[in-house]
Length: 165
Figure (spheres, rainbow, N blue to C red):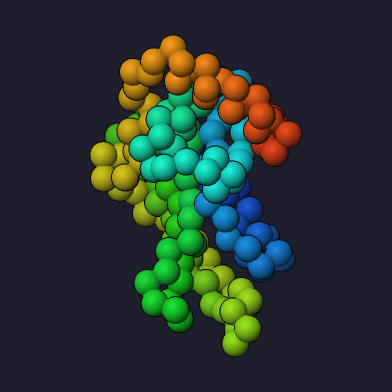
C-alpha cells in the first residue's frame, strides 16, 4: 500500500471528525493524491450529476491528475439511530483498499454529538463499488470538454494542497 493511501485514510478520518462534530455536517467527499503529493478534495454533492456520469467524471479526474490513490466517503444510515461515516481509500498499485467506518451519534435535535474511532479494514479493491476509477473510460470529445469545463468551474470550491514527499 502506498504511503499516500495510509496518510489519506488518517487525514480523511480527521476531516470527517472535524466536519461532523465541529460543523454538524457529513458531506459526500472525494479526494485524490498524485505522485507529486498534490491533493484535491471536493464535495461530491456539488457535482449535481446522476451516478453514472458522476463515476465517469471522477474517473476522468483520477486520470487527468495521475492519481496514485483516491478516497470517497459518505454518511450511511442503517436506521435513524444507527448511522455511520464510511470511506474507502483505493490505491492504484494495490489489490487491497482501506475501508474505514465510525458510528455517528446524534442528539435529540439530530445534531452530531459523538463519533467512535474509525475502524480500518483491508478489503479487495474489486469489492469497492467505486473501486474501478483507475480503469480508463471511453469518453466522447464533447464529454471531455464538458468535464474539463466543470473542473475549471469547480476550482474555487476545491481544496488543493501538497501532502509533501
